[in-house]
Length: 112
Image 1 (cartoon, rainbow, N blue to C red):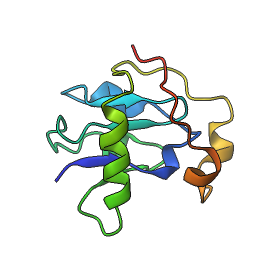
Image 2 (cartoon, rainbow, N blue to C red; image 1 turned 180 degrees about the vertical axis):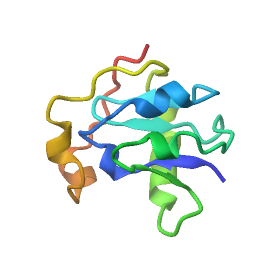
Image 3 (cartoon, rainbow, N blue to C red; image 1 turned 90 degrees about the vertical axis):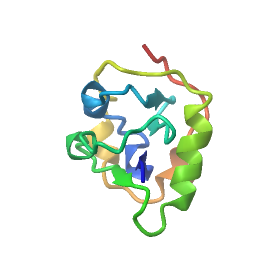
Image 4 (cartoon, rainbow, N blue to C red; image 1 turned 60 degrees about the vertical axis):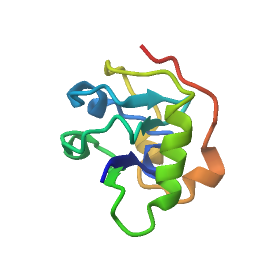
C-alpha cells in the first residue's frame, strides 16, 4: 500500500502534507501535488493533514488511475518539502468535481 494524491488537490494545492512527510516523497506540479509511490513508507501522517481530503490509500477502490498519475508525474516534477501558501482561489475549487478533465496541468511546479 501507498498513499496517493487525488483530484481534489487540483487547483487547491494546499501544502500542509509536505511538511509532515518524513521521507519527502511529495512532488509539485503547476496546480497539484503527487506522492512518489516507491518512496512513500505508508506512514499515513499526510492524509489527515490535507484540508482538501485529497490524499487516500491506493488500496481504496477506483484509485488505479490516480496511482498511475502519481507515479508518472513524481518522476518528472520537482520535489517539494516546504509548505507555501496555497493558491488564493483554492477554497473556490475545493470539492469541485471533474477537476482532472477541466484543470489538470502536466507542467511542473517550482519545487524547493
